[in-house]
Length: 148
Image 1 (cartoon, rainbow, N blue to C red):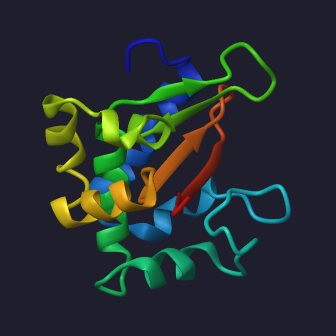
Image 2 (image 1 turned 180 degrees about the horizontal axis):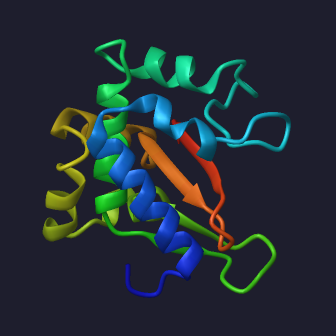
C-alpha cells in the first residue's frame, strides 16, 4: 500500500475484502456501467457485469475470478503516467514490465498468479496477457480485464 493515495488504498482494501468473502455480487457497486464504465472486456461494454465475471470463472459462480482479483491486488502495483490526467495504478506490475526481463524473485511472484505454462505463452506472445486491474487516483475501478 506504500505510495497509494487514500482513495486507491481504500478501494483496494474493499475489493480484497469482497474477494475474500466469496460474494461476487458485492462487486456490483464498484463496477461502473456504460460507455465510460469499468472495462471488463476488450470486446466493449457488457450488459451485466456480475454475469460476465461469473462467465469468466471456471466454477461458474465467480469464485475463481474473485481469487484472481485477490491475487492481483496482493501483488505489486505500478503507477502509470503519474501526475497526469491519465494517471492510473495497475495490478500486477507485470502488466507493465518486460516479461522476458523478470528476475527470479519476480518470477516467483508471477507464479503466484499464473502457471509456468502461462508464463511460457506470455514469452511467446511477448507480454503479460493475463488479468490486470486499474484504479484511478480518485479511487474508481477503471478496468479488470484479461488479455493484452
